[in-house]
Image (cartoon, rainbow, N blue to C red):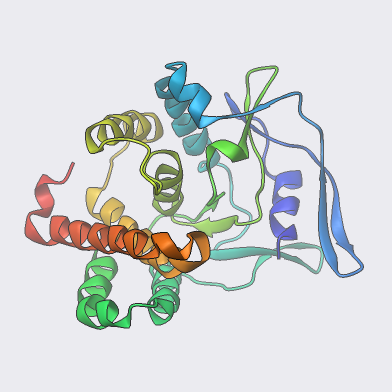
Length: 271
């Protein structure tokens, strides 16, 4: 399935201002293993600590927001939503959803069924399902989503382009889905990189760079955050050592309930 984005990279993704993708020389399956051969890029991988310590973080957050926005305008070779695959000489989807809500609610089912703390799920499942299904309605076209935008997956070339690598999680998605995933990795990942005020300031920079003059839909934004926190709660045991597990789980639970409260109490004031 990883080969679908290689075909897209080779045929559809080009250079857009500050953003470019790596040229794909070859890809295929050898002895049952998928492989992709990229051009070598002269440059360096972005490093959060170095950027933050040097005071360059705001500038790069703005550039990454512009990069993601540019990427989401690229013509998508398929009409539906889901994972890209490569079969029969072209790009397809291994799951073909006509609506982004269908895809997201399927993922929500998958995540909720696999969360360790089923007491939490039983208590809040109806609220989670309701607030997500009511607020992620999206009637636009699917875009090419990288779905793993983070500092370690971005190379700044010697020509000062930002090059996005490691496309194995790429999907055809609602662009807000990719925006939220990128913001979590860049600004709000666990353990937390910043205070709430600092994260909010950087969010404003990231959001302004991405949306420019287009409309930002806060309801959809927070609904995708709830979905993302549910996904992270399901994966907590995989990503964190056992001695941190309770703390990590509690963080994601609190985040889910906080975002539900924001949407349910006074959604018109969300900023």
